[in-house]
Image (tube, rainbow, N blue to C red):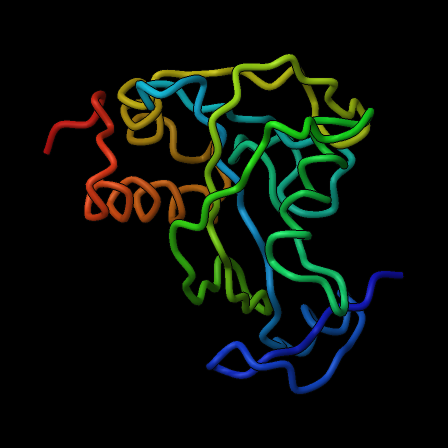
Length: 184
């Protein structure tokens, strides 16, 4: 059973509880979401389809990787761990460096109160993905096409992803990180 840090509105640790208890009682806890761009053009992003046996949102499309931080874990280390669990079962390549983008409070379904930190990195593969965690091989998609598909077929995607992706793109543009495939 995984234990998570319970945090206050300022992201300060106040206690800990099991993941189940955090969700049942609505305790605020920490998560990460990682977005992998294929190259420096930032036109394509890696998405994954959650495994059918996943407890939360099985079969839905979502970010490259992500999940809950375990008790005592930093956001960065949690991000690296989640990458290893989902996309790099033989070990996360040393060339991967996570860059912080945004941190915000999210409640994507009842009882799930999180402070989520978004990271991005650039890496074009290869991936040795976890067939127990993902329903199929993760794939790079053009951001423009992804945004269109989310509008046409929103039920294919996790709610958290539909919240996080626009935050990621907006924050990156505000920080003058050019995303050539997005025109406002």
